[in-house]
Image (cartoon, rainbow, N blue to C red):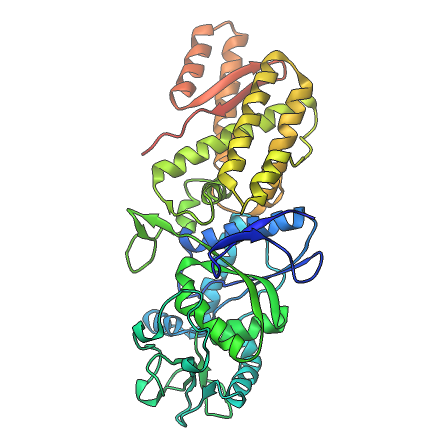
Length: 467
């Protein structure tokens, strides 16, 4: 088995990963609250944890991967009013937008993707258990709260002090024993959706669903709980409070990806700097956007700029062009092979930047071998590169990218460039070398490099011009 080491947000240390069950890994990732189209800050989490999942699978583990959908929430209800649409229609629309974005970036579907509204029964059962154990209370107006002072370990994940917290602004504070108590269940309001419970009709608080669904799909204890840094408090802290108060061991390890930032600030709709995935896919392909989002270490902030995205896409296209050229030279696609260097990097808390340095070195050696004609080195370099790309979810030979949507820029360019190459070939046939050179130079000015080979002319992109 893999000698994988991972960082744990709870202990603030990196340690050897040992699953609860030999050969099996259970992961719960907090998914989308479907109240708006996804921006790249949302999807980075999906990419980062997809890389973790792929590496665990490559290392021989059977992975059960749960990613929930929050389809009932204050924000969804507010958006429904704004759009003058049923709340469930709003939730479904944006859930589909998230699914499309995940697919475009080759994020594997979860083993199970439970919706909050499909697990009301499990939430009611959990609340009943918490009340029975004295950890929660129902003041009689339909609300149900968790008594945070009953749990001595509360706030160990975020390392805050209870007396320093502001009141939990999720329900009527006059009904709480302590202003920091948070709502497990919210009493029904006129016009809002509601479900019946022994304590009155209402709907779930934000945190309750994840404790209930993690228990339903992974049991009382599981290996890894993941999400973005912004979920540490209050969401993940309150999940721990609910689950441990119910007597569950809950998550053995906590992993959090850092944010995508813009001008140093977290990308969010409230800041007005969000970049929707669907818009970016009009400028780059899904495989290129994934390469960009997955290139930084998952715990490092990723400062977004269009220039950085363009440079990243160009770097990836050089790798892609090399693999295409190798396939033409050897007559077959490279066979994915995991090198020792790549394995060491990934086992070191998913050190993708180190792994990318290994890819760059293999690319350098492979290109030199093409010049010298050393087919053994050509093959080994290409196999190593493709093995790494497969784990990173950026294998250009993966059929998923042929059907995942987004801007297939190479496909669009290819038709135009092939037309230009046909005109160049016609000029050469009629001995009009001036016209032939003019077409070649014109393409070069646009960053399109033409190379004449024994198999015919080949084009590649040397740079992406900014507009």
